[in-house]
Amino acid sequence: MDRDVRNAAAAPAAPSTPRAPQAEGSGLRSSARAGTATVHVAGFWRRLAAAMIDLGVVAPVALILTWFTSLITGVSLPPSRTRGLDFWLDLALSSDPALLTAFGLLIAVGLIYLLVFQITTARTLGMRVLKLRIIDVYGDPPTSARCAVRTLGYLAGAATLLLGFLWIGFDSEKRGLHDWLAGTYVIRG
Image (cartoon, rainbow, N blue to C red; front, side, top):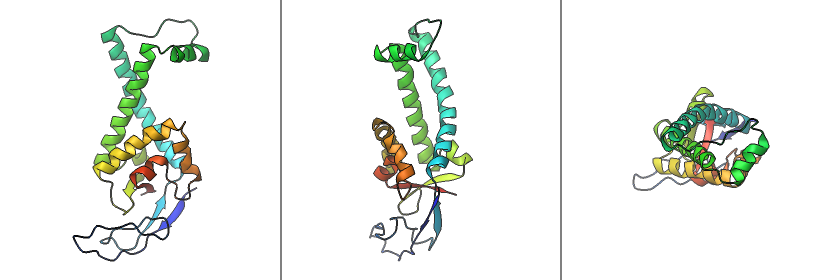
């Protein structure tokens, strides 16, 4: 479910004074030059759909890199007639080099993809399709540092057994762990 977050008008600050987040409401406010604005924070399901689109972009690239790497190194998955769940669990528990390489490349490609798109356009391709964008607590596009912290926050969200992402569905401001760490929101628009 989407939630409206209303911004209060900000008083113009002196050029040398940094803008501080507003205490009332959600902490989100528009920049002084924009006046009063209303933004709609994106909910869990819309963000999950955008993430699935992004996974559809990242996974083939990671698979191609994994295939190319296995050709160069000669390390590949062991042959098996049936590749059920127990086969993949055995490989994971035995720390199979081919599986670890594939997993590492998927994570690396995903993090690079997220970082580049967040810095350059403040949205990923999945977010662009669903008309979502990332803003900071001031209503501006996030800085490169915020994008880097947000990208590292994805690792923290995954390390908590995905609870950092499920948090979006239960948080009143619809922010995940990565959003809280970086001071960002994902809004419609």
